[in-house]
Amino acid sequence: MSARDAFVSLFAGPFKGFARRVLGPSLYQQVRVTFLGEHSGLGLDWRWGNSLRRTHPVRRDFGWQAGQPIDRYYTEQHFLPGYRADIRGRVLEIADDRYTRQFGDGQVMVSDVLHLTPKAPGATIIGSLTSADHIPADSFDCIIVTFTLQFIFDVRAAIRTLARILKPGGVVLLVFPGISQISRYDMDHWGDFWRFTSLSTRRLFEEAFHPEDVTVKTYGNVLAATASLHGLITTELRREELDHWDRDYELVIGVRAVKR
Ligand SMILES: C[S@@+](CC[C@H](N)C(=O)[O-])C[C@H]1O[C@@H](n2cnc3c(N)ncnc32)[C@H](O)[C@@H]1O
Image 1 (cartoon, rainbow, N blue to C red):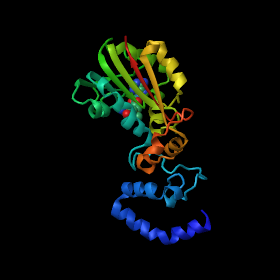
Image 2 (tube, rainbow, N blue to C red):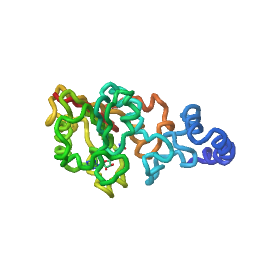
Image 3 (tube, rainbow, N blue to C red):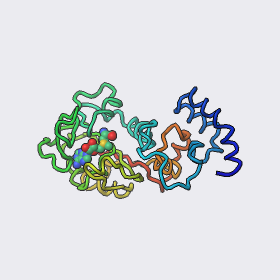
Image 4 (tube, helix red, strand yellow):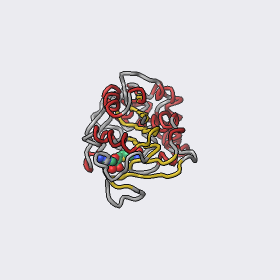
């Protein structure tokens, strides 16, 4: 921190503390990045030194404790809203039904949840996507697989299962990271194996689906990727910063594939 910044911090500190208490942490951050953006570097809070010269992330938990993680912004504000109409009929989601409920829009007739762990709350089907022979073929109109593919070592087997258990005309919607820290909880429980690119994603899905039925989208830019690696949250960046698309920074990858 420069001498000038240290001087400003010393006197501005009490006022910032007051503003944070009055506005609450989330609104306070939004006000800071909106009005003080040029002076706040990456959008980092002044307490963090406004510097990238640090070997520890600002937050290690993707930002979950503070608000909406940046990768979830692309999932919840871009990818899934664009495919609401696909989330209908009998819908399968992995581990919980959060996006079935959020984007199903009253078109969901049956909601299933697949979980690896026996007796997991809310699970209607127990098993792994890599060995799901107990799930009949042609079962689902829609399958939602968010932030899961990177945790499955035999990713080809998982994609074959998705294609098999979809009904003809059914749609699978997947979101997973192109750029990400390790997810420690997942690493320690079932393994965190892969980061994908749009190209490897397309090749993998074209092995199980007709190439014309596979759509791959990417989201992010260098700022969003850096911020995400630090566990910053959506309200700490401006909307236009989040929405800027740079094809060389595939922070989040989304896939829509339809079964013929
Ligand atoms: C971070 S959660 C993602 C799902 C959640 N709906 C979400 O959006 O956050 C990762 C999940 O992947 C699941 N998982 C890991 N390996 C799996 C496998 N082979 N088959 C099915 N699920 C698996 C884990 O049980 C874990 O609940």
